[in-house]
Length: 239
Image 1 (spheres, rainbow, N blue to C red):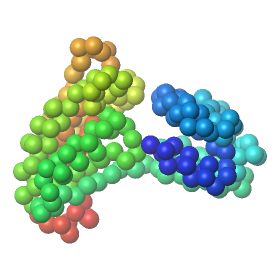
Image 2: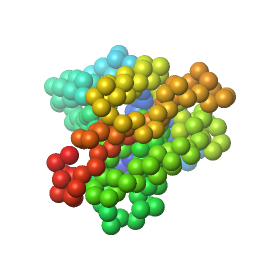
Image 3: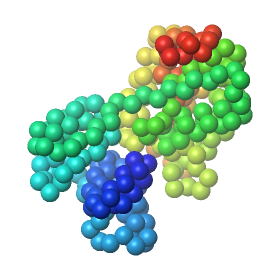
Image 4: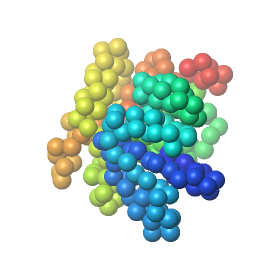
């Protein structure tokens, strides 16, 4: 998603671009590069580099690279911003996002339910714009069972399988982390409205599969969708 924003801006302003995807999931970046070549981009305008910390340091330290844009965790972003800025580079770092949606009673219910399901579970929740906290105002909290029912209808499968709506998590470590969060929420009194721990699609039984909706009585945090009900719209800005 992010390269689809940055590639047009960089190239239309006369710049070449180096894209370093996550070393855990580099496939989409390679597909974008192939599509750019088919579209007629000259060689060298879009460049894909792979790797982890050493590759990041190369990008930061290479004098020919004048600007860096990063989206990701706080720890990595703070490192990139500090080291890059110290070398006079322009550094844009977008860190630690958590996205909220407030649902008001006079909204279009069907549109809202479809949008929530797509925003929360698309890309298995593994994108910076994924919806992770849902604030339900007034009677909209009664819509939760319908959100869970729509989530149940998602086709959980390998990402390249036709008709797949929800793919696996990126790694066993990511699955383990989410399952720990679920267990912790249960211990703190959260209601698990939809619990997909242990789910195994027939074709990919060894994948990193989780789908979940949890509800807290206070602000709560979908593939882990946390939901909270409040009485009025002004409260949503305080949640």
